[in-house]
Length: 293
Length: 199
Image (tube, rainbow over all chains, first blue to last red; front, side):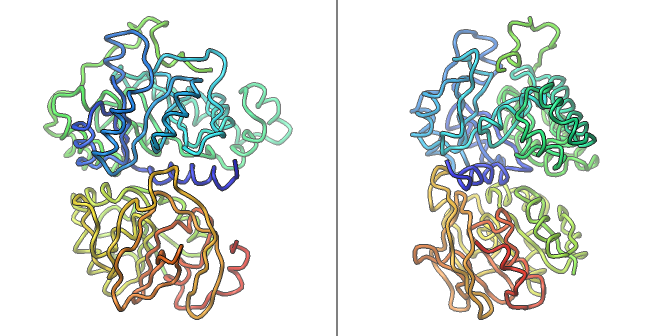
């Protein structure tokens, strides 16, 4: 595909900056999200917290459900495919979703390969835990990167770990001379040209968003202050006691992420956040972030 | 001249790069009183439903309308939607700074977003540029005091009224400086400096 096509894909990611992308399971939730000021919704049949609870294979959502959500809202509608499942991606492209999340939240379809995203007209977002993983996904054509965090946990600790890791590895690259970059590319397992580019830019060549465990306005602020450019909120909104006011609050918290006084008033009286899980108590084989390579 | 970029949500950063290329100083505006510190404003691309929500919460409508009486504003995509008079969506509350009606996402969803060549007439000069349309809006009705700067498929996509310009595409994504220059650099025609950015 042409360079201009890739730029159009990254362009939409640029437009989503400073916003909140919300997981929704039906048109009613999508309506709440758009009314609250979400910049996009992620249509999925089960939010990560429910996937955790119920188990079983998680697949791409039912096209009918995606269409109903597209009819309900005017903001971009995203949907997830299983890692490596390019046929699901082809179907989502035919449905004209605005962004595809090749996501570890669903059960992987391929244990070695991710989707070759350059083949698609629709842009992709992919999760990462470190810079190498981010650059491998960008090499495959991802137009946006997000931290994996630990989806459905309501626990921010993993998203923080992943964002800090990516940012510190980027900083490290900027201090390196040309003679060190090839060895570093090998170390990271990342395409050399992208390593060079990041070393020069001091940031990822595509927008860098946060996801996985964001449940409060303070969580959103924390991720923005650590360097995220937008946040995804998965289970955090619709597993809370009052989704609408929480959604409104998180939208405002992302814009005013560094204004503690404003955050204090935004966070006031939000009722109960989602329950949340201690990562140490999630057995390693059940951690979604381990999926993808 | 100090320019403000409305930084509630959207592609704020890319506009900053264009202003830097032109040697202009800028600040990010997130509170209405920051409008007092600038003498020009950019309303960037983003989601107009989100922008409306955040502008309402922070009481931006009146101060921006007042600001527009004396100072120039440039809006791109969602920025144009916010500058328009009427929008085809109940969640969007436009400012009525430019006398046009606008349809959101009128070119379709993201798979229909595109880059194409566009011929621009500005201050008696003409240039061809690359224009990026992303889930772009269309102008459906246009007031008699509004000047058309460019058309795509015979439909207006760049307009000027008084000192304000509104675009349904994103010059900031292609490092095109001519619109920013026309709005913020005192009525100069498109000069030679532009040719390096033209497609």
